[in-house]
Amino acid sequence: MKAIALKLCSVTGMKWGIPFVKLFSGEEVLEQLKEIWGTVGIPLIAIVTFLLIWHFGAKQIDTSLGQVPGPAMVWEQTKALWAEHVDERIKADEFYARQDARNAAKLAKNPNANIRVVDYTGKPTYIDQIFTSLKTVFMGFLIASLIALPIGIICGLSKKIMQALNPMIQVFKPVSPLAWLPIVTMIVSAVYVTNDGWLEKSFIISAITVSLCSLWATLINTALGVSSVNEDYINVAKVLQLSPTKKTFKIVLPATLPLIFTGLRISLGVGWMVLIAAEMLAQNPGLGKFVWDEFQNGSSQSLARIMVAVFTVGIIGFILDRIMVELQKLVSFDKKTIA
Amino acid sequence: MALLELHNVSKGFGEGKYRTEVLKNINLSMEEGEFLAIVGFTGSGKTTLIKMISGLLSPDEGEILFRGNPVTGTSHERGVVFQNYSLLPWFTVYENVALAVNERYPDWTKETKDIHTRKYIEMVNLTPALNKRPAELSGGMRQRVSVARALAMNPEMLLMDEPLSALDALTRGTLQQEIINIWTKDKRTALLITNDVDEGILMADRIIPLTTGPNATLGPEFRIDIERPRDKTELNDNEEYKKTRNDIIEYLMDMGAEVKTKKTTNYRLPELKPIMPGKTFRKRKEEDKLKYF
Ligand SMILES: Nc1ncnc2c1ncn2[C@@H]1O[C@H](COP(=O)(O)OP(=O)(O)O)[C@@H](O)[C@H]1O
Ligand SMILES: [Mg+2]
Image 1 (cartoon, rainbow over the protein chains, first blue to last red):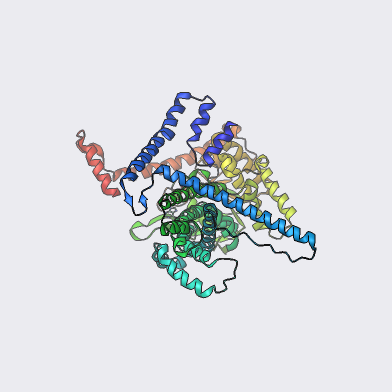
Image 2 (cartoon, protein in one colour):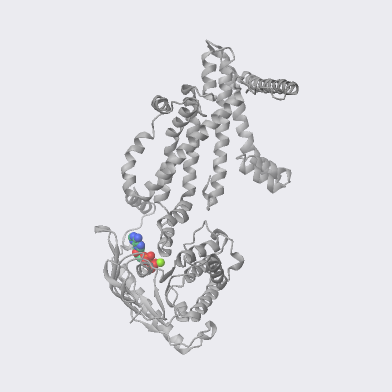
């Protein structure tokens, strides 16, 4: 039981839970209290201080949308957004129930009746928008990985190719998503003309922009990892006379996995960060569009809602990072090197 | 014809000012079925020698012949047990050995390969650890896997680079016996690198010391004509053993002394400088800084 609780704490990145678990199992009480003060007490004081400064600071500034919202207003809007979501779901359920009832009645009258089934078309709620953003970032991350991994491996294996590509990598790496977006928009609009497709154009544009910004970390880390595999392992490959393919898959890639995952982790982080900007401009129905729309039709609640989005982005980013760390631990042979 | 021949082999590393000549004019000949031990101090170039014979490195000068043909790269004919085990940490014991078996016998059926792999793991008494990863094994167990991996490829010649140096005395003794047993069974040619004279005498037919580097070369050979099986405890009373051991150690000590005197002559003796408390310390620090920054 205790072991499970401890494991849970470290997996979720909530290391501060560990002393609590130990405290309840009666392990060195004084030590644990000290530990709790350090890991929970001090941060808690910092957070409360932050909230207070925010609360009183916000009152000092009047914007065209009214006073800058304090923590209380943001919390209220969080609840409001959730309530809207629940409302919307209830409406949808009712809509489908009515539709089913109507169709059933029709069929009862005439078994050959022409029945219509339509999707509910309410506006996407905040939760829907979060999921759209997640879908977009994963799509972008997937594209980035599919490009960066093979190129990274090739760069790592061949010094010449690395030398050839390095200048371009260094130049494209620092480019902002805001610069990529117009280019991507024009190209996607020119190439992806069938608008009946199963993917929204705005979705594709956002995803590609995300990949353009996030693929570099994976590419560079993969190349670095592949080119710096421990010489001992390479010697084993030579003595066993492994074929190039076998050498790559049995020796080089496993040895490089920790670094590859470090790269993927950074990529996903960058992608998530960049996504909001991309969605704002591409009008992809995700968190970015939510922020943009709130900003545009500025009501008195808009700023508070945008702040909810800020916290949402931060918390989801943190969770994504933890997931990547756990995946990294899962595939790494040397579990000690991962922070 | 000798199985392995080295003619005037030399090897160095680096270029220009940073060049060190590690090995110089190495001449060696090994017969089939022979067990040869090379003893030498750390850093003298033993690993470099093994790497050249295995084909991982090529000599700068001279030639290495295996069955009369020049060695140009690695080959399944020469198996290597590396100094630092070099197991693949992402594979289990079984997978580490199986990888070698797969490469050596690609045409065998799955079952034959499996039986063969298990046989060699059993030979080094690691069947209980079959599915463990190297990180979960002790040093001795890792070295056993390394030996099993090399043996499973049935090489004509087994090259062992200080396979037992990192182990405690007890484990070392056991493994020495295991290696001898395996060698006695199918009389493969074996080249053992070691820094332990006793180990050499216990295991080998012939011991050749490697002089200290740079420009290390092979010294005179010492034949060990003690009858096998040799028993470690009985050896201590064996006159032949005592004599050979003394000869070799004397040779190594003389060589060590030679090196030491060579070194002290161009040493700056600290006693010659006046010692001033505090000052020397600061000066030292500045010198260090110059060196590192
Ligand atoms: N790849 C290399 N590059 C430069 N110097 C090397 C290299 N490999 C070995 N050396 C040098 O050669 C010398 C002998 O090394 P080594 O063969 O490992 O010695 P031993 O195995 O006897 O301890 C050492 O001084 C070492 O620094
Ligand atoms: Mg060595």
